[in-house]
Length: 242
Picture 1 (cartoon, rainbow, N blue to C red):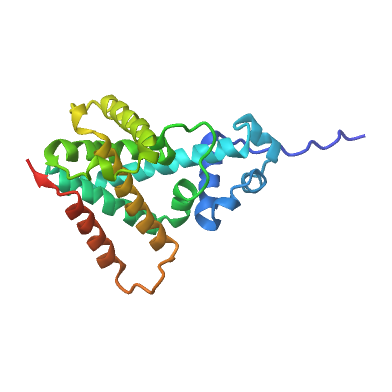
Picture 2 (cartoon, one colour):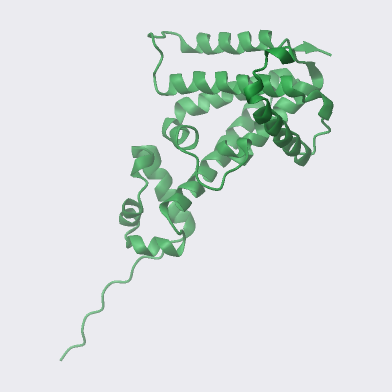
């Protein structure tokens, strides 16, 4: 009798292969396509084999989020590489770079910025990836250092959100300190924290509307609308050079 035929061995895969396939499914089909079954099928292995690398789909999604944020941070750094060393110019270039990336990476934007945050993330700035958060905060720190930013009177800040702003202020100071910036803590008061939250809400809201084409009217020249939005924000906060 001949010996029984052995089954073919499963192809060798590694963590980088898994994240690469997951990222490809994300880009081609969207976040919901990143299932363990689909990834395993693309790799020619069984879904349970993936548990050697990740305890759950959420863990894998978190790893892909990190990869996306790392790439976005590189794009934002590239957006300011050749610019003059001016805090205002560089800050708004980062904002434009974020919009450009979002429009050309809509499904990755959806995963990182328009999906529920994974468990274990506590810092407000870590919700969109530490590398990206540090770039935005580093640019904002320089802006606050080199420019006199206008803030609203404290009595116009709703008392219901002041505790949240104080917590946010503490987190910002910690991140700025970790980044090595010699940032004057007294400049980051409650008014500045309020302005920063409003700024992010307007920037993120505008980009999200554009990515998902959810404007209430047809916008023929979205570039012009975005630029005027940034200019309006700039005027609102003063940006008067010291």
